[in-house]
Image (cartoon, rainbow, N blue to C red):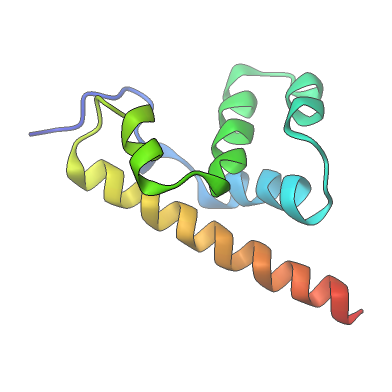
Length: 96
């Protein structure tokens, strides 16, 4: 069964989400500040995605009821990749 979510994760650019994840989790800019500064709806979606790194798997599934299992796995993969990137960047900042 194909994913019924029109904003499916397969259409999300990792680098664009990573940009906002860095701002949120490395630079420490609050999600609401990032959202207020956003100029477009797609930018807001990327910010929201980047801010979901702390959400566990069950909550993710609740937030994505129209996504199939394959889509959810992609989202978990994106989240894990972003978490790894954020942790590496934090380590670099502490070492500097």
